Every structure is written in structure tokens, then in C-alpha cells.
Image (cartoon, rainbow, N blue to C red; front, side, top):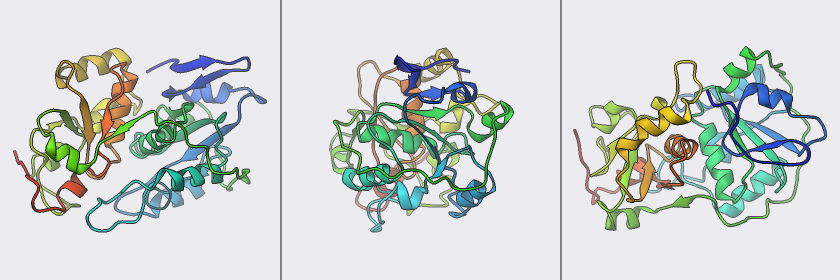
Length: 292
């Protein structure tokens, strides 16, 4: 378990840009930097489940963020299952959530950071640095004795977030197709989907040619918290290829953010995201597909 992973120390308290533990969150002093907590719990098979669990109990002051409504744009059938909204649209949403340039944001879910990592990545996409995942999510918070509440907070709404230079990089399908083999492409899906044995969600089974598989859940220890920085570095090292740029993808650009986060947590540098991922790639029958 990572004890402290922070960007800097202000005159009031630490600021966090990767992980924050439940105890660290509980100890953030009143009167410090503005704090916004986002509950991103979700279920791909039941898109209302996350909101139900939020209403049943959430961290004090937390606001709910829905993967389909708040962290994705409209689907066209060719742009993937969870296409990114424009930065301007998401900047407006961030303002609605009370997030400004000085805000410390903490994101969590009940699914091992599967969806929280997407929100973390998207805020960094706006140029917001002080956003951290709650290590272990809701379960860790309750284990640490943290209180829960059931009412939605009356949080202030701010103007749209002032978009800054992105702290993360993306690559689109055409660029990826033109440069296959020039990137180290990492697929975050479960092995059976990667190999093409099953495909419950997308148009075709298989994977993008040349991709390697690293299931996002392998970044977590048995208790649901992230593995240590040293263990992550050891496990990710064989997936790297010298100075070859790393691109992350998954089914729809969500769990790929988990792998991207793990690499950054391990101190292996910033890598790129292919947001459309397999759901976009496989929607075009002219694109190559590999199996096995």
C-alpha cells in the first residue's frame, strides 16, 4: 500500500495527484484547499447500479458522476462505447461539480478504481493536476472508520473549468492504424476477451494486431488497493520496450486509464491513451483484427 504520493506541500496541507489513502483523506484539515469528492461507481451491465449504491451511502460531501452521462459523449456506432466529450463540454461539467483550478479532487468507486481512473484521467486531460484516486475506494474508507451519508450535498457550482494544457496524451484510430508496430500497445481487457475467446460487448472478438495484454485488475493487491510502486515497476518492466512510446487501450477507453495510472504511479512516465479502444477499432471492418 502506498503511504504518501503527493505533488507538493502547501502552507495548509498536502496536495495529491495520484493516490490518497482513506486515512490521509480523513486527516485533510478544515480550511485547507477546496475539496471535491466524486463517486464514480458504475456497472456496465446495469447503468443505474452506481447511482443506487450512491444513494444507499457515500463519502460525506461526495457528488455522483455517471460514466455515460458525465464522462462520455453520444455514441454514433463508429466512435466507441464511451467516446470522450469535447474538452469544453467536460470543462462545463467540472465547473458544475464545483471544481476550480485550486480544488483538490478525490475520486473513488466500488469497482477497484475501474471507473475512478477514467475521471482522474479526464481531469488531467483538462490540465487539472490535483486529482487523486482514493486507494481501495469505498471499502477502504469504511474499513478506516470513515463515515458515510445518504443525502446528496448542496455543493457550489462554478463557471466552466479554465482549460489548461493537457497533462495527458491521446492518439486517434487513424494515427494508430498508420503507425502499428511503432508503439507498445497495451490492452487492459480480461485475457479471454483479448484472445477473442468471447466478446460480450463489441462488434468483433479479438484485439488490435501487435497489442500485449495486461488486465487492469492485475494492478491491485488482494485487498483492492494498488500494489506498491516497486511491485508495479517490476511487473510492468517486461511490457516496456526501451524508449518505444506506450499506448493504452481497452474495450472503450475506460479501464485503459487504470493501466495508464498504474504506470504513472510506478514512476514509469506518462503514456498515451487510445480513447476509442477496441469498441471503436472493431466497428470498422476494414481494420485488421488479431486473435489468440
